[in-house]
Image (cartoon, rainbow, N blue to C red; front, side, top):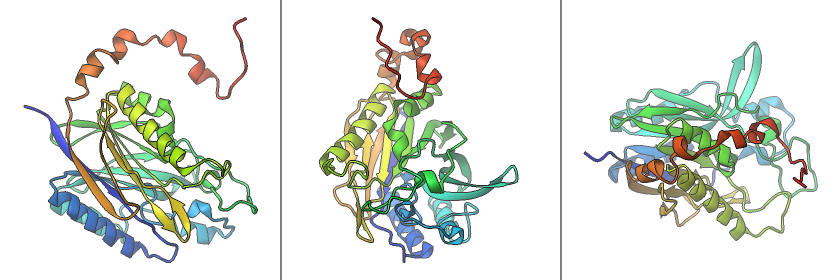
Length: 316
């Protein structure tokens, strides 16, 4: 019997600084209901799905910063989403800013969780590849201060079994999708589906002359290459549109293990797309072209983990 899982990418339109958590959760719940009505059993929400993309703002008051973070998940304001998932028997991925204590120290992470159809937490991921900068750039059109507001994730790239079909699902966040190591580590752990949320500005802060269509192309390229080279489904969900005047591109995608885009959003607002994923589709790639056990030659890859930056080292 074929193993199938119908999934939905639930793209969010803008969330402004003045928007309340309660209003955002209502939007998430409305999209979950829409996804469920289409037959989807798994919904992928965006990165930082409960707030505006606050790293674009320079803030020095820690209390002001921390109001964007969640000290518990679920908490009083997010519990209704978990309860709805339980009622509908829909699992989901949710990105948020996490405030926690570790070893007696306060830590802040850009985090995502996987939630089972019974409303219980299955797995947690903390973003590893933090983009942007930590210093104030007063002349810039906006800031990208993830390196200031977040600690580097410390949980690695795990996969978890979900649903009655025992689907092996991995998760990552935004900039992680651009790094091939992200997908490969999860593929080596058997990932059949990799899910991620993102908030990607229309403009490259450090290279403003880069056109938006190139940024969207790189987004597609990263997801499609990650899917094909690891024979895995990839579901990538945006928070998009103009938040308080600052634009982010949409282009939420569902990508097959063949690298083909099978569904994508058409707007920069709240929009749900869904696809019935055949989980066996990547098997021929895993058995042939990307049969890791047969073809990988790790003795030649050591430099990938031994060296971080580029060092010119010609063989001649």
